[in-house]
Length: 244
Image (cartoon, rainbow, N blue to C red; front, side, top):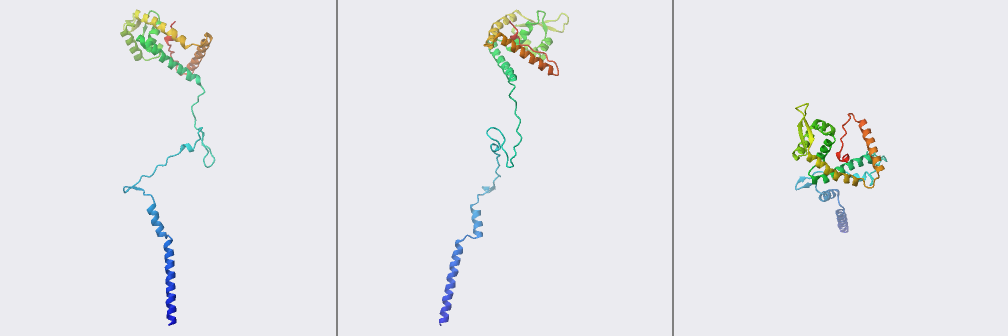
């Protein structure tokens, strides 16, 4: 009898310890549970059942170079080769170009009220320096270093305005020589009254020696450029600089 009771007591103790172990195991997440939880919390790569497109990696160039534009060293301590940049030391060329551009704009502003463009006056001023024998359009195109079509259009507009006229050459009936009309000469006089004070205002603050030295320097640079050109160009002259 005592043996049976002892056996039942031992059986109850074994069952109790088994229940405690099972409860302890239930508190520890198992591998299968971790996999299931990871899948549940992982962000989905699908949108409405469709696969998301791969994200594009944007290269951070600011991390490769400093604020001063110098390349930073990579992880191996090497610096990439510095990229070339345009030189900015020859300001003379920039100033010559910029002064010429701004002066052309200023001339157009002063010529517009007179009903003539700078290009048309350029042709008219060049014709005034060729004497009274007239000039053929081919000679004028070569003198101004422009195409025949361009010079032909300018002469047509000057002829319509009454500033020039064409007349046949006495030695070649097929050729036409261009002459300035009295209206054209009157326009040149009016332009002189505009250009002379305008050029004086451009040279404000300069002495006569300053102007002479600048002209001599630019003439020397022009000669150096001409010597390096493959073909010797025809030097175009702006009449506004030579009419006194």
